[in-house]
Image (tube, rainbow, N blue to C red; front, side, top):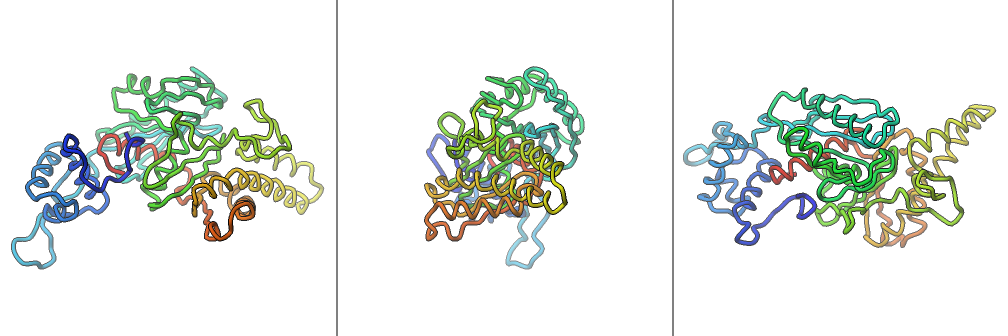
Length: 383
């Protein structure tokens, strides 16, 4: 699974793993570059031409690789036959369970393009009722696929272990919910379940061009982070890496959190909390100017609290890029500026002076696309 290895393998490994690793090298090279001849693949991967030809024959037999005609540019000798991943042979079904009012599902291409999408209102469902909504949505999305399904990827809030058990997701009322196994039994398809913020950072890596260390903070019903270091997504020994939402920020108490503590980051920063606070400030403001000032104060304080939590992480890991995922009308601008200012004021300027904080360009589809990366990695070994 993706947790156990680098996202993009680049070298041969132990003898007992050679064939699988070589197969992955060929698929990864084609997935990222496309239009390669057998000779090109041999040069790119360092494998012999015989090994490449053998692997290509196997992959073509599985309909994973296709020939796309001969290379047109003039070269000495017989024109080479170009190969590519068969990008229309399979589709991927994914679910995003992180929305605070709506669950989303989509059918994606192997390249991460959303081909169709649908959703269902959560309507406050928790526990088994929430699972039933997830299962119904999955059946609906699967019915919309127009090609064989490679697998199902699910981004869930909360702590998710390697077996796809949601150990704790307070917003959905789940504890030790065997979501991956239940959905796999219900559909007969390979299923991978991962924390939503971890899915988001995988999407940023595979489809957002982020090939370096970064921290992604996802703000929705809750607040979580995904961390990419050295080409690997970091999940933690107890699968709770990035669970920053219920870390208490500061010593001044702060608003009461749903977990029972006061001053958790989620209580300052989650979408329901911010929208509620801004609405209350707008309703009580005497003028539009006062409403705007109050909104800016709320967003500034939320950004400051986020910066307080992120500063030691940035300092400890020497991170130079942070990505925010969530409603841009809340996160972009005042809140982002306050976050950066706070981080810089609390870390060594000489080490973090080039710190970049930006919004993801993948919008609300980031978890759906990241869940697809889990399937691609698990089923094909590519990302």
